[in-house]
Amino acid sequence: MRLRSQAAVILKEVNPQLFLILSVWMLLVGLGLLALAVYLTFKHPEEMKRSRWLRRYKDTDWAQYLAGGFVFVCFGGVLMLSSLSGLGRNLSDIEMGLGGGLLTAAAVAFIFLLIIKVVEKFNG
Image (cartoon, rainbow, N blue to C red; front, side, top):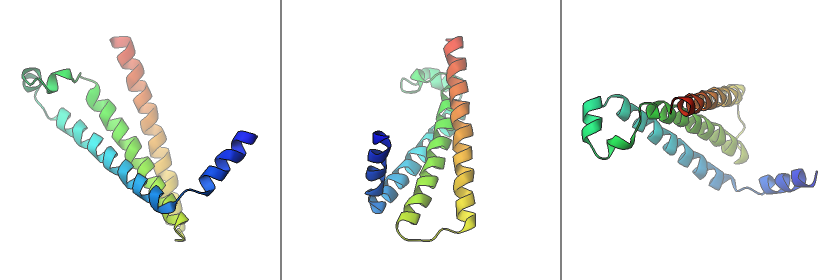
């Protein structure tokens, strides 16, 4: 019970502007992971073997970056909506539904990421 009250005090004193900056940072990290997944997807296997930088990536890495990118983008969007609410902006029902949908998409992407990791563990 004491841990719950400490967490409530910490969350009550979070600066909404800082929260907004961190949510934008999460969005940028997610977009970077998605860009890396697209880059690795469209590279030819022979070119990946020749390049010293690309040799370290395995066949399943693109799927991990894709799922991780979706998780970060979805959580960044949810946190951005939450921080806008903390800044005094009233959120509409559509924005609240969007936040719930983004949370669901993040949960599905996280489960997909766990499945990829388990398959990789058994294959390698």
